[in-house]
Image (cartoon, rainbow, N blue to C red):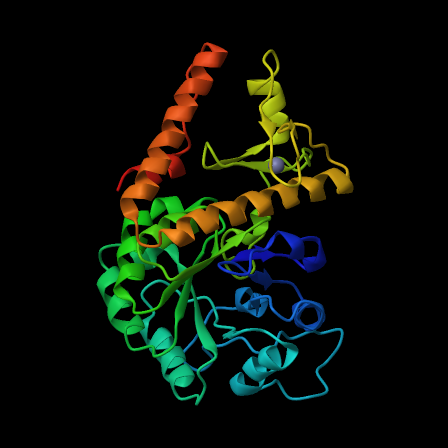
Length: 344
Ligand SMILES: [Zn+2]
């Protein structure tokens, strides 16, 4: 599934019904799901549980059901977990996602409490969302994590809550083993590591189209953009298995050589480094990313659990970097994520 912000109608035509759907985020996600379910009743739709990043889970309150707003005191009591989930289904979501608070590494009590509460619901349309701090995946914590998650009778969607960039690469081998241990393990708010985890036994993955949706946030964190003055979009290059900023491609790679052309349904044979910082051009880049991502999901989806095929694809991407380096007359290193995908 592809995870997007609130402007779902820009992406609905790129989603393939057989193996992908739209996960809609942001404060007006429910309204957007309602509209989409009405105009496209055959689409798989889900809500990104955006309240989750507003707080850590505790034993007393493992779910974040409302956010205190000093300017507008709540007139109504907070919804119950059941009401919160039913609102998503009522709006037309294919399944509901729990607004689980971020789980501090090693806090098994809160995680157990959350699972107990969701297991007590008499529903079969719920995915338990588990935003986990990175240190859950250390050797000291990972077996405990597997033990606790095994008690969940619903599908489990794991996200890494981290604001330092590229968290999936840092714990990929441990994450693969956790996902493979679950009867129905999913990955949520991921980057291309979601594809790696599909190849390693995840049953589904939600992958962010925009960079801000490629990891869960830690409460109260402010995500740093790598360069706030450079708003030219990042572009997915499937043969390199990475996103590259347009300005970087133009300045560093294709200043003196011809840029490759992209033949996806959005680009239709135009140059891959053409995007600018206008709203229109950025949207076009995001649509290229969504189309390209869905094509990759389709390929991996047809081969779910085929580790060797994915590893070979990653090794081809490493080789593509060497080819690019040859063209430029200097070494072009693949990013750590691609090396991690190739190492299986
Ligand atoms: Zn394209």
